[in-house]
Image 1 (spheres, helix red, strand yellow):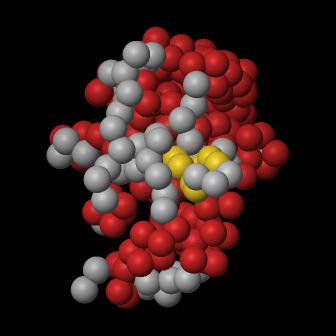
Image 2 (cartoon, rainbow, N blue to C red):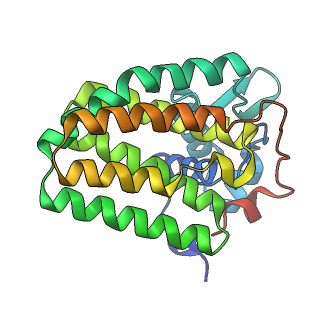
Amino acid sequence: MNKFETKHWTSDTVAADLEHAIHEHRLPPGTKLGEDELAEAYGISRTIVRAALLALSHRRLVELKRNRGAFVAQPTVRDAREVFEARALLEPRTAHSAAERMTDEDLALLRSNIASEHEALDAGENGRALFLSGQFHAEIARIADQTTVEGFISELISRSSLIIALYWRRRAALCETQAHHALLDAFANRDGALAEQLMKSHLLDLVASLDLRNVTQPPTSLREALKR
């Protein structure tokens, strides 16, 4: 019995599941999200599907096109530059703050995240590795304890996943695990200045790894894409 048959789905949980699939690149940019197909896949009404898609559109992960339906958003080159410029402005200072507030429990959580990222890479699950990389950055924003900035960074990370799906150079666009380890060492030493510098360099390297000519293809079936 699969997840579609065992879970009671709401618009929030459907939105979360679709977002996860987008982050893991099981639903690439440009994928048409047909209401009927999604309703059948999840075993729910089109009303619930519609509410989930609307919520994702507010996070700029889905585009709702009149008379055409819903599609996974396709960020432009300009979008890509603006998103990563915004991250470069916010995340280095957030890393600085996180280093100063870091607890042993926080460090253990970040180490576990990196370990899971390694496992995904070793298994060839690049989409999952990318999702975990985004989670690493999101956890840093949470640890910094700046709620408003955390919200901004969370949305930027989500949009970054789409950008990487559209323009990545395969493994080159995945966050380098060595960069994460270096950040972890700075956090362990509570070195805010070093964490800030490392985060800035890390984001610049990530932007440099994007290939603006590369476009991914949508899946043949939404139901297959949503299965794990």
